[in-house]
Length: 254
Image (cartoon, rainbow, N blue to C red; front, side):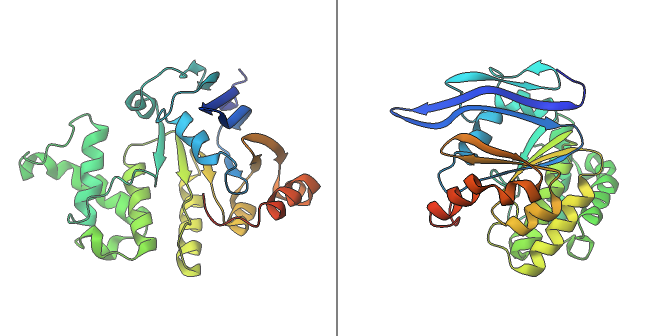
């Protein structure tokens, strides 16, 4: 596989009984790019993400990450290799402070598991790094606030911070803008752009203006298959893509 391809799937397929949710998908994600996966409702985007992170086992096909076949790997191993998914499984403890949440994520990265009972002294060295991550996602003013009290968009920023604490080489963002108002969308969009500088991002996103402004490359799924691929300008003019979106009555749910 070429050096510049960090993640590829070949013939990736998932059957549920008589229904094929993902049907022979070939995808190549370039190292260092922001790659968006879009498509109408029921296109198979979430199932595809679940296959990548091993929440589901593929019926057929292969997944290669950094030159290594990870088709049969366990979810924890995928994360250890540097492929980490955010948002779907929010690693945030609602009653704990913003800082503590990031500190716990840093402990996980070090393999200390969830050592809540460790002494404050043992955790202190993580403080500086945790504060740096909190600042990076624009939450310095909320560092002592319990996560549950954050606004929706700021909760998302905290989720990005806890994902970054694991120091992923590649981040999978699952609808990062879902349920957000414009101000939050702009803030998270800027944050994604910032954190993408030295890593690869693959995101499922419904907000097409976000996709247009962030993505280097876009893959359109429809009925579990790749319908089109390219930059936003070419994909958005593709008659099959327009038909898939309009024919499905818009794009609101998963």
